[in-house]
Image (tube, rainbow, N blue to C red; front, side, top):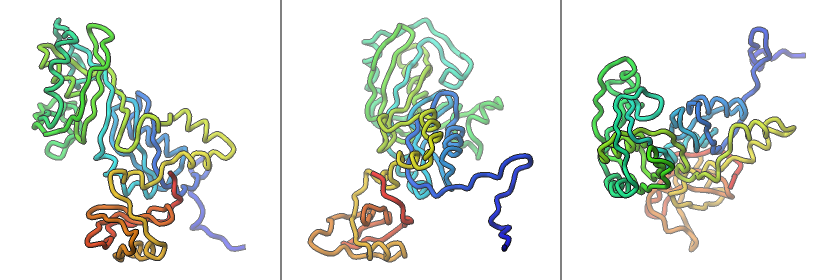
Length: 325
């Protein structure tokens, strides 16, 4: 009998050896609960799936809930295409109180007795739609001199952040539960801070305000209907064939390329692309595509690249993964 010391898992003192990580590829659309950071939510998911590689696309604050896309394996190569996608948030604004963090986590720094009417609120919404200049919250992850703004703010330093151009595609008033609060939905682009929208709306209405509740409903190709909770995942994982059942709920790696054209190629061309070679798109059924696109063969993602003069030039290739639609 031959010994294979390199194959053995290191045993923790007084415990069992760690479980072997799995080759998992695809997207999970998590409904992150309030109270967890995005990193903590990712950690909880990783303990269930045991993937070799994982990451999330778009951070949610601990006080926010909702859609957190999580990429496994080959999907981690596609994260930027999801992060850059449109996002939809439903959020509650509380009038009459400004906080240092622009949400309920921070101390109240200003108060006002002014409560806007529905008509007044609707009258200022247009100011916050389109390409607008927005100063991020002092407590944000933006780096200032190599350090996160929220770290500097917590250390008592004065943080001056420059305004940035962001895009808000739509902002609408959903309901007004009371004179103190109003619920909104915003569809926006990358880099938008909903907390800053609430803060600036308060100023535009001659009062002050902060976000009292926030839920993300959409990120790029993923919507509210795709979400699954941690409790639901734990129930699935506890079943006899839990790992297999968990995997069936994943979305395909190629889902991230929802805004790009698809080029269908043959198996032989797939081999060439995976070796980094360009392929000519031949035949009468060849797609009329120019620019960035992704290639598939037999339903499997092969490569991301550029199409120029009917030739697909691979920029990033993907291993064989089971297609999931």
